[in-house]
Length: 94
Image (cartoon, rainbow, N blue to C red; front, top):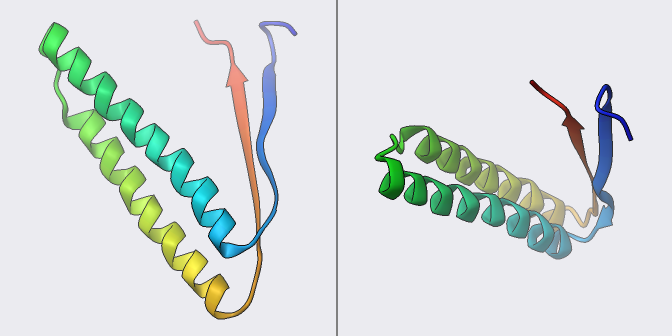
């Protein structure tokens, strides 16, 4: 691996029943929400940092969860499975 390129890692790549998809995706999104809440609280306590950016990100993640729940509900109602792919890209920055 070198510092001059973008590196990609598969996080999710599969077909899921609606209940499985819900569990996997909600766990990931809740993990990100918890991270932002803990990080912003810690930064606010230590440095008096503004919480609004983190609060906006948490709200965006919660809105995404609602959209995901709606898609999963539609899949369940129609007897469909869901193909989910998620790729993590890492690039070195100065």
